[in-house]
Every structure is written in C-alpha cells, then in structure tokens.
Length: 265
Ligand SMILES: Nc1ncnc2c1ncn2[C@@H]1O[C@H](COP(=O)(O)OP(=O)(O)O)[C@@H](O)[C@H]1O
Ligand SMILES: [Mg+2]
Image (cartoon, rainbow, N blue to C red):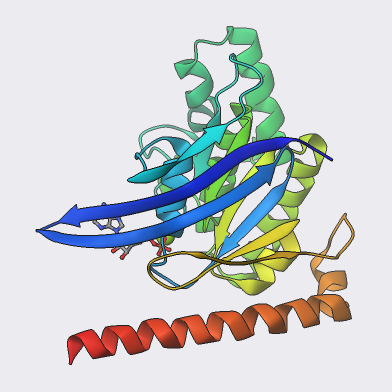
C-alpha cells in the first residue's frame, strides 16, 4: 500500500474576527496516501477551503498538525487551483502557464518544454497568445489547471475548480483532469460540493459535518479507472454511493440551516 503523503492529526482551526470566534474545523485526523485522489465534500461553510489553505501552509492550525511527506526538495510541495480568479489578467495564456516555472527560475528550455506540453494537454495551444478576458470560463480554468500541473507539485489542491462552469464544460474538464492526473498520479485533494463530481473523481470521499467541520465519514469509491461520465452514471454502485452520501449531506445541511435560523431568531 502507498505511504501517507499528508498526515493530518487532531487539526482544529478557530478564526477571530470582529471579536467573534468561529470554529472552522474541529479535531480532524486523516491520512491521505501518495498518489491518492481524495475528494472532500461537506456543506457550505464547513471549513473545506480552510482545510486546503492549512495544507498549503497559507494559514496555521489553531491546534493539531499537518505533516507533508516531501520527497523531492526541488519540487514545490503544493499548488492550488481555485474556483476563479486563478489567472493573471495582464498575462497571456502562455505567460500564465509559464509563470510558476519562471518564479522557480527553471532553465528556459525546460520552461518552454513544460509550457508547450501542458498547453497541448489542455487544448490551449491555439490560444497561447490570448489574454484571459478573451477566454470563456472553461478556457480560463484550463489555464489554471495547466499552470498548476506545469510546476509539477507533489500535491495538487483544488478548491471547487469547476463549480462556476456550465455543466457541459464541467464534464469536459473533469475528464481532462482525470486524463492528465492518470499520467503521473500526483496526490490530489479536491474540494467539491457536488456528490457526482466526488464519485467521478475520487478514490476516497471524505465527508465533513456542518460547521464546525468534523470528520463525519470516509467512503471508498468502488469504481474502476479509467472512469467516464457515461459509465459512472449507469453503474449501480455509484447510485448506492450517491444515496448514502446524500443522506448524510441532507441531514448536515438541514442541521446547519436549523442552527442559523435559530441564531437569527
Ligand atoms: N479569514 C477568515 N476569518 C474569519 N472567519 C473565516 C475566515 N475564513 C473562513 N472563515 C469562516 O470559517 C468557516 C469555514 O469557512 P470556509 O473554510 O470558507 O468553508 P467552506 O469552504 O467549506 O465553505 C465559515 O464560518 C467562515 O465564515
Ligand atoms: Mg470554500
């Protein structure tokens, strides 16, 4: 069995804003294995983005710890793909994809090789000189994907990267992501609020409870790879898994709504 890539131990995060404490995450213990595609799902506000920022080292835990097993000091430990605003508007597509490589002072030939490779893998070669404002939302997310993969991070962190896209574009990008991921099998932590997406993409699905986010359960997705939307949709195992995740989420969302209407009363 693959070794642990990310070890999260008794992790808690409390925010202080305007003299108010918000407990975003509470006592999360979770190991994510090398090469695993781990989907994280939970109701809005349960601390999913907080968890990714903590893994990225952009924020510090209030309690507990996160240990990343970095194997190659020359590779960045993590790269993040956000829902939107991940591309720099004043740079062309090509410059956006190359940006992280330039920041890391890679040799020019290597920058060109990787940039060309990921432009091609994401279908962006014809748009390499375009600026983000000339691109659709789906194309912009392709740029974000290409940029994140190009720096060759040990861990890819993705925060609802396709949730602002229309459904057809989302399907296409999910399949592209799976195809690129399957070439090198990096460790991925993928936050989503879509059950279908978690089942299509994930090796395991981590369910978080409503605020504060606690670990509610971990489901293993029993579906073979490569996966395609058509086969996943018709597989009875995915229907069973969908139902069990939805039953959990429904109770959590109702719980969260009940709590907020009680506090507004
Ligand atoms: N920088 C911050 N300061 C104060 N509270 C925050 C901050 N970031 C997030 N929160 C709060 O922490 C909780 C979890 O937020 P977040 O991680 O964004 O959840 P999710 O991504 O699951 O929607 C929410 O109650 C949110 O309002
Ligand atoms: Mg979020």
